[in-house]
Structure formats: C-alpha cells, structure tokens
Length: 554
Image (cartoon, rainbow, N blue to C red; front, side, top):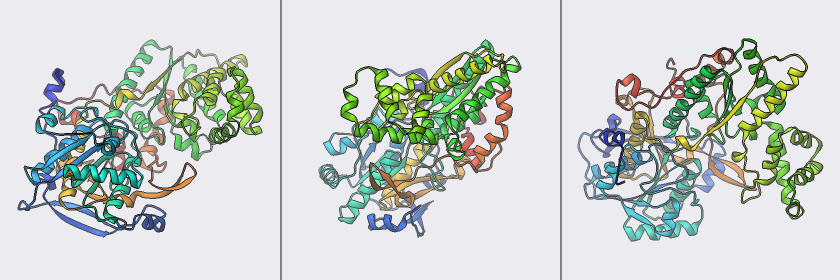
C-alpha cells in the first residue's frame, strides 16, 4: 500500500456509522430471548450440536457504565470469495475489542482458514488497520476456500490459537464458512476449550439472509457496480440501436443479484432462476419467451435491448438439471472409455448415444459449444462445472436460431445481432458503498460485543437497516438456528440453508408488475457510479431489495 488514489485518500477519512447500542463501545447490556430451534430438521441438528443448539437470540442495548474487562486476544479469518466491506468488518472488530480494553490484540490468519491450520498469521496493528479502512478487497490478510470440518483441523487450530493466547475467533464468510464456524464452536464448547467462535455474514450473492440477517455484506456494493455497467450498456444500446446484449451476472445458487440489478436498471428482460424452476420451464419455452420480446420490440423498429441472466440458471431448468445429473453419472461410470476419445465431436456422439431419450433430445438441442463444455469441463468430483458454462452465449445463439426460423416462415422481419457479457469479478472488490461501509463496520463491532459478552456459535446481526443508522439494532443469533440437513456428495450434512429469491415477496412481485412494460419499451435507468460524497439521498441509498422487503416505496 505504498501509493493510494485521491479517492482512497479521501475515503480513508470516512467514519462509519454505528447502531446506538454500540456508540459507547462494545461493552453492552445483553437482552436474551427465548431458546431457539433450527430452520428445519431440528431433532437432527440438536443431536449434532448438543453443546450450542437452543441458545437464545441476543439483542444489545447501550450500557450506561463501561463494564470491567480484561484484554482480549482475537483471531480473524476471511473465508471464501471476496466481498466489498471485509476490511471494515476487521476495522470494526479491532475498534470494538480496543473499546473493551485498550490492550486487546487482533491477529489475522493469512489466506483464509488455511492460515489457522498452518499457523500463518500477522498481528493487525492500528497503523495497518487504518490503511485499509473503507477499502474494497480482502488483501489485508487474504482469503481462501479451505473448509474447517474435521476434528484434526479443530485441534491444530486450538494449538495454534493457544500459542498466541487467542481466546476468540471471528470467521467472516458465507453459508459454508459459517457452517464451519458453527462446527468449530460446537467442538470447542463440547470439549471445554476456552475459545469462542463468532461468524459474520458475507457474500455478494445475497443468499445468506433471513429474518434476523437482513443482508449479507457486499451485496449492496456489488449490485451497484454491476448496475452501473448495465446502465452504461443500456445507454449504448439506446444510442447505437443495433445490438441485443445478453449479460450474465454472478449468483450460482440464487438470483438475488439479477433481480436487484433489474430493479435498479429496468432492462428488457431479466431471467429469475427460481421462477424458471417453479414454472418448470423447458429451455425451448425460455428461448421462445426471449425471442418474443426481441420480435415485439422489432415490430416497433427497436432492434436492440438488454437481457440479464443469473449465473446458475442452467441448473434451475428442470430438463437441463436432469441432463446434468445423468451426465455426471454416465461419465463417472464410463470415465475410462470417455478418456480414450480424442475428437470432440466423437465425445459428443459418445454421450448422446448413451443418454436416455429425453436427455439426449435436450443435449442435441444445445449449441455445439455448450455441448463441448458439458462434456469436458469437470470439477475434482467429476461433476459439470455449471458456473463456467457460458449461458449468455448459449441463449444468444439459441434466440438467434429461433428468430432465423421465424424469419424464414415470414413471422419475423427485424434484425438481431447479439453481444454477450459476464459481470462477476468486477464487483467483488469495489470500494464499499456507504451502506456496506457502515453495515460492515457495525457487524465487526457487534462481533466484538458478542465476544465481550462471552458468546460462542453466534452470527453477528445488525437489523432495521432499511432505516437510518440511528435506528439500527444489533445483537447475535445462534448459527444453529439457520441450519438444516442437506445431501452433499452422497452424505447428509448440516448446513446453513441458502436463501433463494421468494416469488411471493415484494421485490419479485414489484418486478413482475412492471416487466412487461420494460420488455416492450426502453424504460432504462442509468444509476451511474457509486457516490461516496454528496447529499445523503445520493450517497446513503439502500438496495431496492431491502427497500421493498421492508415495504418502503421504490
């Protein structure tokens, strides 16, 4: 960090806002609620987490007097993919534990959970933390995707923490990372090991949320970055008037990003995977619906437009999902014979001839390039890497074929040219919006307060975030409360349930109300870049999703 931009230099002076309960520091009064259960499979979850299951939700209130405290030594881990605001979570933890006792210390384990296991760490000093306040990225200590899920890892982590005198760990991550945090907390508590474990909700995908976790951090900023780019493309499309832009957006398991960006930019079409699955749409029906939008605009002379596509769409199309399942089984059993085939077209023929009739039909209907990707791109477990499938190119090509057939039949007279884009990494490390800067700092400070209150197996919770920060509340919820059992790699495992787009909730219903108008007209909205300085109504916006979920007018 030897040279910083003018924006970063100015941004470093921004002081994030805190909920009223934390204004006087992380020493708080704790209000405990009733014992909690799990979101599903409560009996099984309680058996697996008998030491931490049933803990009450806690809400914090400002303490009149600063409680007596001793120095804390805390370790922090960034886990999984990057999300804007991670550095502010660390800053909040640092300031929070210092407010409890000025001699408290914070260690960062390097490159994710691997750092805990390999004992790779650095002490996070005031000068270092100050240099990263309000910045994007995870480069202060790095991140990684190692999973903490075995007793051997837990014991190695215990020994490494004991060497440093660490009495609490904060794991900043998504649903899998916080599931691992819950397992770690359970192991330490069950074995009377005095190391607390607290989680913080992170993922730009927006699928780690519930009644008490209103948003995962980074979602707001990432969606604003993508929406700026989409708005720029909409402006270009409306100027050049000759291209249809198919834009794939991050969101492997849920379509929250696509829905939020649609609400911000009003494109001509936005596919929501959860709706496709609910309606049991075939790929042909999906392509037909997009071709209809293109044709209807073409009748007006508008041979241009913008279509948003979620990254994980292909797994939500029932017939394609069945195809992928059959492909995974086929290639697992025929792996040796398949490896001996060198010619790509022969690989395609090999697969097509061995699929069941319905799957073979679907496979043959896909563009050649997508067939090859389904054949060749496998993960270490032998499964199709659906996130790498170029769905935007697949749909653009299939819509083009459909329109050419209509033109030959005399039912389409427009012009169709496609451009494809994938917006992913562009949004993961952006400088956090004011909302994410404030929210992340509050999450970190709340994590410190949970440590100060002696809690373990909790996730930091900051609520009422659709209102000004003066009305925010904070506390913690037991991670077991968010868990259920799911089948993973052939075994039933306890995991935090992912939050998919709810088709009956206000954000999707608002989209449904207006999407036909947006499909036919060029009602584009151009959000522009994130604003960090200026009027509150410009700089302190919240996501459209959050506004609608809390019944505020968009």
